[in-house]
Image (cartoon, rainbow, N blue to C red):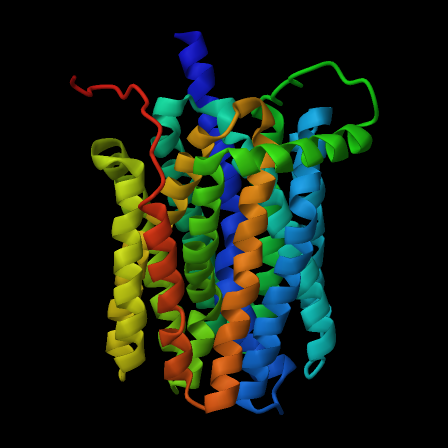
Length: 424
């Protein structure tokens, strides 16, 4: 009974990191930074030019994480320092998010620099957070536990975002001078929220032990392990096939997360409407992510991901023809239904394809490909918009990534696990 109770506490402590860091993903990445970047830090720039700058900023952050993630994961595995590495990257992200408060109007270059560094901290910490799922969840529980993390992320990120939105709508009620000060204070609140909800994981989640005794420094052993794993991955067909599929379809998911608000502004939708749409996605995403965890257990994890990908293809087509803010709200509901589910089931499926004692390193590859994919998506949208002057074509271009990723995923064999309540 005690062990089971301890296990539940560890799962909740692990999932609360998603509750905390999702404030950055929601308020900063998806919400206020794109709007503030266009209206405050790049106030005098052409909308297509600022879209391009934002896409490049997201891509630069992705490159930095992608280049370092596998080696950092290997070092963390060999040194048994996953939690320490997570804390280091989270601290970087928190400090840089706090720094956004001090950036003045028109200083888009400084805002971009801090945003890139904060995104590196956020994305780097996710490598180690994802890998710690093997410390708190058995294979037959991974769908449910992974979904719980994403669900709490939607709820926690959405709750703080709601407060931040209220601050921008009624700044005087919160003792603030205007909307721009409210946005800047929101960056401070995100940093504090993220820091607070990192503590349960650091205090309660166990550090997985080293698979073998350490003979050299973690850096030397980590590099040697990375080289060995690169060779192994080439011979692990199911792993690299999944990674290739994931690289393509998660590009579409991440691009829509990061660029949806910018796309809506390019179509001329009001900022308030875009914020409401983001809130809709967050609160629909909470129960939907939990439901996807159960769906994966019932019909199979891979099949659940494919359903989500099919919906996303429809989203890109619908986005091309969208004309009204009401349609943008409908799109927000649909995205909320599948976004967390695709992410959660992908993490769960991958965790069952890899050796658990090398989880950080293998999740380094997983996150590397996710970030390499996000190099293409935002830049592709920005480039298509810049070249054609038609943002509708930019959203439609993302569909090809979902189609290719889904086609490859069909070839991945899902590992069989004993599931509770499963017959035969």
